[in-house]
Image (cartoon, rainbow, N blue to C red; front, side):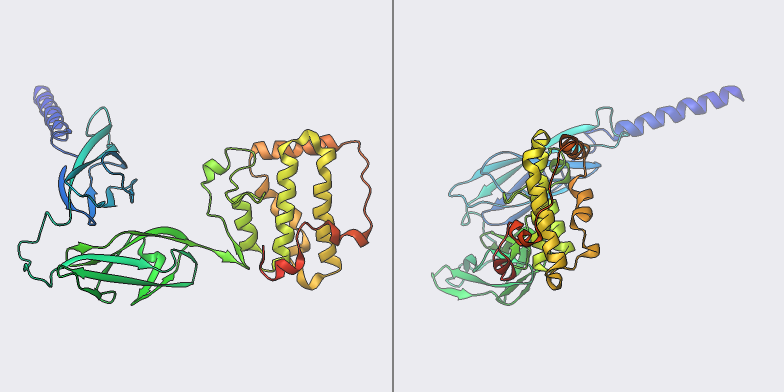
Length: 368
């Protein structure tokens, strides 16, 4: 009985070894199609499988914009070429441990790109009405959320005649939730960047990049920063160079609705940025903190109709966000330590408004 159990155990181990061997990289290629033919202007999808994590990159050929490069399916628009060219792409995949010991693998796919007139539909009629190309134009490629722009898809046929086919095409959109298209009208719905194309039958138009941003009270918000990169340095990311960290700026305009409150909060954030740069200069830079406090006091007590934030405490409300890393908190602590022992006189309330670093009239007109 003991011998029989031993034999069964050995056989089970051998079968498991054969199963795992059968799951080797030779039996399970990552990329579905490693050799692909495509025509200029087409969309190509390269599909991978069997892995947990994917990262695509382009190795050679005419550079293209990679869409969804960190997913199993890489998409891109085939560039215009005058002669046949090859594009090479590589996927780096993290494989489940059952497949092999070295669980990070790489595979490549080659996309052979042909000029538009090389590969043809065998069933297409070779007459003067055959579609040759589609030209897509968008009147404004930079849109605020909930605003509109016009678009046109113009077909050119082999006899060089043209036709507006905007109502006939299929729309290829890298993020379909970002826009709403109704005939010639496109409405921006989500803050992002997309690539848009029009397609009819086998013909795809040129690709158009569309930027969708958010504008609040006449102020265009910077894009949401990458948190890891934003928190890696003392001052973080300030893409529009206005002295306020992008994540703090976005929070201010989403948290507060009144233009004057937003302006006071921006001054507060700028003051923090100045004092954190070099805490040892606290006795020189403290004036910026005093200015923002006095400006806030003016609107709290002398123009309260324009100023009604929660608890009237912008300084306290924004501080946890501004000082959200150990390095920033330490710099603020050092700033306060450097102020120790100093004497700082209160200012005359008649000068409070002069402490504001913005023009109230312009702010209320949305002229940031």
